[in-house]
Image 1: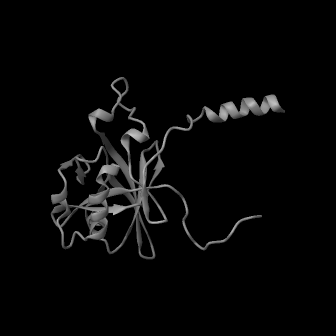
Image 2: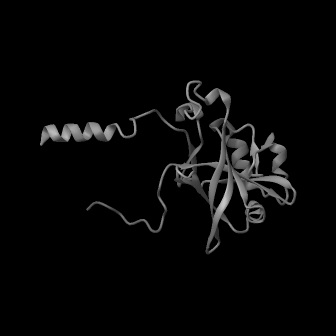
Image 3: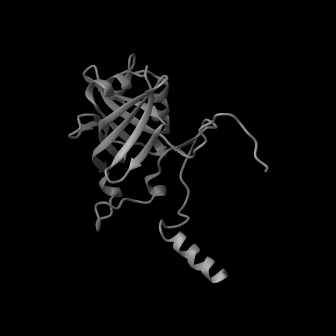
Length: 195
């Protein structure tokens, strides 16, 4: 075996970078995080993990609502800035145009994809607060929605989300390499022919 043990590194990549929004002390606030994931499609569940001392964390706990805003690579500077300053000292709502859905959390107009979420469950592990959220509504910029099917959105390279790796660098998504539930069928057919 040619494997090297490198320690307890959660090396799952790439990591999507998102802006998590919540109402904190009567105003919208946003936190840049890479700890966000889908937990299910039916029902639509997501999870985020944040440090318990983050200003936004307290807002989520008091309102039981949060938003996930997916920025583009053209927003990398303001997104990184949101991750290095605290909402305790900077009003991050001033950086964006805000809108609100039924969940009550602030969302960012400039981000092409926004998830309006309510908290289903909170789990605390050491200094981490993990929120499992139910997606109340998903908003997508008109230009990224396929006219024929409102649930079909543009391909990942067109949406151009910010990806992160544990090398502390930001990346962008590449091209399409296959279609889900199709590549496996082709593999199955070719392996039957080879067998």
